[in-house]
Amino acid sequence: LLAQEKNYELVNLACSGATTAEGVNGEQKTKNATVPSQLSQLNQFRKPTLITVTIGANDIDWTGPIVDCFIAVCGTEKDTARVTTKLTDLDKNLNTLLTSIATAYDSTPPKVIFTSYYSFTSPTQSTCAQFTGVSEEEGLWLANQATRLNDTIKNATKNYPFAQTAVIVFDNNGLCNQTSWLQGVRDP
Image (cartoon, rainbow, N blue to C red; front, side, top):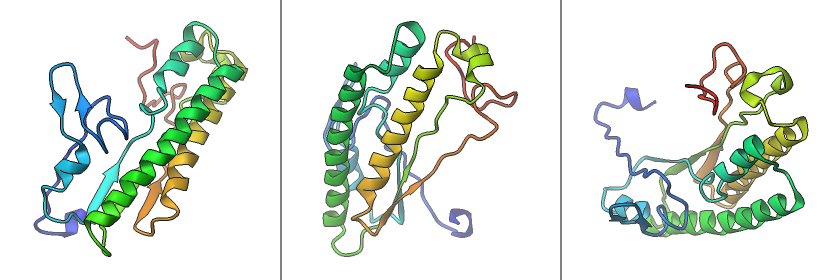
C-alpha cells in the first residue's frame, strides 16, 4: 500500500523498554536520558496516514514470567494475579493513548494498527530442546498469558473505529521449527 504512494515518509519513534505509561503516553527514563513521550513526538509531525504500535509486553513485564518458567516455576496463582493487575493497567493506558490520538486529530484521526504478540510456545514443546526446563503446564500457562495480552490489546481498540489489531502469526516458524524466526534462550 505505501509503496504505491510516491512521497511517503516513515518515522520510527520506538524506544526499547517503553511501556504505555512510560514511553508512549509519558516520558521514559532510560539509562542515559529522559526521552519525551512518543505521543508528544508524534504531535510534532503533520497528521500521519497510519500509526503502528507494538506495545504491551513491557507493560506486563513479560520477560519476568518467561524467565521464571525457564529457571524456576511459573504459572502460580500469584503469577496469574500479577499479570491480571498489569493487564488492567495496560487497558487503561491503551484507552488513554487512543483517546489522546482521537482528541489530537479531532474527528478524523489517522488509522492506528496495534500488532499482536506471537505465542512462542509450541505443541511439540516437550520434545524441543529450546523448552528444556519448562513443563507442559508452564508452556500452556505462557500461551494463555500471551492470549490474554493480545485480547487486552484487541479489546482496547473496540471503542475506537480508527484502531484495529493486526494478528502476528509465526506458524511453522516458531522456536521448534527448522525455519525458526525466533532466537531462543538456548541459542548462541
